[in-house]
Length: 335
Image (cartoon, rainbow, N blue to C red; front, side, top):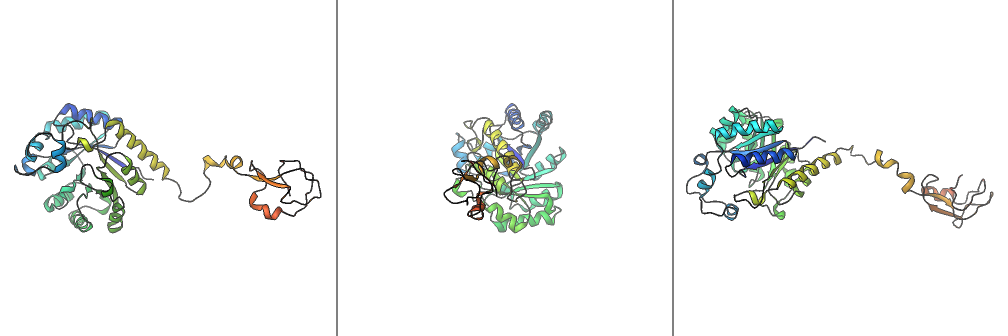
């Protein structure tokens, strides 16, 4: 089975602190994810000063800041980006960030980033989609809030402006934080694959780790999951994020699922269980002393372990045959 690309979404859970951002990188590296992802934006480029916050942002951010004021505090400076990329390199993990505006896209490209992550909110942003297809050779696109026709339209824009089907991964997603289990609709991921015949994945905002694990079993090749150092920290995304030990457990479970799904798909005896056949299965036995020349009957035959003799599946064939020698009780029958 192809290895699942696991993106640990630090997002804005650094709360504007370079030290916290580095601690998030430490946690992601310790969990053995493939990428740790942040967010690159200038607040004045992506939101008006009067824009309202989402309900979950109000609930998780205990202040009266506007969405603009909230995001302004969560910006990473250009120097912080450079420092974080160097820190990722020292930790053996790949750096990734989502650009939320065109200038941020150019900046990430100038830093050598070759994988673009399109967030759900930009799936209807035509100029954004055009440029991202022109600038980045690999694209991962989240689809929260979108229906299949909107996904098809965005996908076609990417293709029309230089992206190839092989370069695009489309992630099923729900953008409620946290996502109620009844709204996950995980099989919609397969709907996307059936409609577009592209690589699929899942960006998860549920509480816990079971849904992304299930997504891998269903065929997700990319998993994205928010994480934090502490769910109780103030900020819009902490409450719906995994803590470090949970992130580590998710990665381990996904790698186990990859192995479990890597078999031939043919139902056959595996190497590890072959040795148990003789122990767990049964054979035809003498239930009491049988003298040579006697016929095998329901009264003098029984079925017991081990399975090293005649299979009980041949019971009817053996019934009525004549014993060619004496058999003691519990002795394997021979014909």
